[in-house]
Image (cartoon, rainbow, N blue to C red; front, top):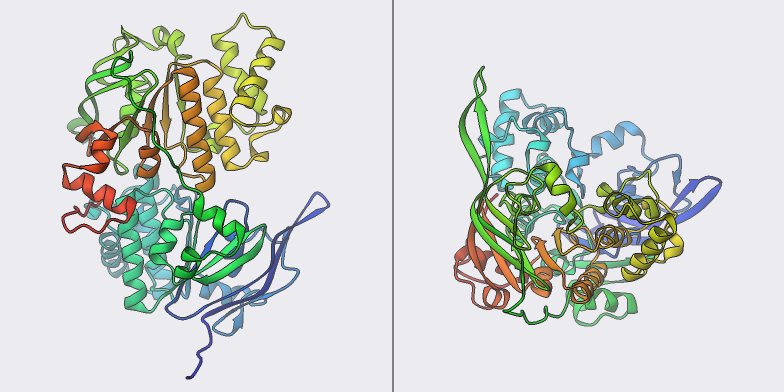
Length: 544
């Protein structure tokens, strides 16, 4: 049997970073091959060296502070590490394309979606503007953008996270690359969207003979898409093999740890006599669509359209649905962060009629933990200052020593060493930053906490730890949680009741056990099928 040479061959690759007179090794003598038409998954937790390895292929690291003490990266026989810049420019986006994890930082905020995808086509394929426009529309259809004709003139900030990621994927696939490097491409996507994108990538791989280097911490995705798996930790590959072998018979302790790391358990049984903390009746949030010189309102985007919800003390209401379904908008309306119609009662008090100043005394009781802790924590403030800030406003009588004592106590409660409280957010891992964000909310002793995708950007094992932490805090303080997520495994581990939303309306609402075990609507069935890899014949195919 004739052996064919691999499309990509990484040999003995090391990556070092030099800063402040110190050198750190991020990738340590890594070797693996990718054959034509093959998908190799590079898995491991944050800081394992996955993305650094991937960025090395196209020399996208911050040189000269980054360097390669050893190794070579052979693409069709040519070493990309020693290739000149003109050759690299030809390879980038044409022969090798890359999908990045965070589309908002990868897309140009000053250009429309049509301009950004079209630029790729005109530069690499020499298409005319008309040809590029037609191909752009075809690509947007292909990646499942709903009504793409209306999206061509949109800017990145006018699209949801899932939609932006689809645009990134469309750009990457535009020139039919031989190798696609996908760096956590589905982290920000809903489960049905994720399933569609994975199916799309698999189809393109089959149709075009495309190879993939798929970087992820989600082992569920690896099982679906990869032919082979390389497990990384501490900059080294500790285990490599066919996907089935890695999943069924993992040899290394770290691989076993990854496979065991998943949010587990169920929430405590709901108390039907528990006090109602938050109640919304016929909540509506409509955004006007204005046109013409006089900016006349011609229609509305009905982000939340007549929804009733109840959240009780010591219990969790899970809100699920795809990007653009209105989940976060509903949560912000209940927390009185945006204007809405309908009535909202908090602990028996009507708050929907209160203004900004009237709401201020209640803010300590209504707290929010956001999706991206790095974006929600000030980079200019120490952890101590971040947590202390709310106390200065809501508990003005507390002295400096009393505030510091509370900071120490809440950091211990969330599992952060209090001795690190004078460090800054960038000095902590993603999981640690999310714990700090939770501590900032908990130090004000709230009764209601809105958690907006608090685990979506975290590694599986860190997700499980944060879920356990939230469950412990809820039990200890009898907290009411509004938990917003597209991750149904996390929702199942935490929620007593679940609201399924789509296009601003409730599709299904009931006890979590009933929703998960006996879903009534095709949409809910589609969400569950995508989340738990259930094969169903009647699951609705849902596009954004």
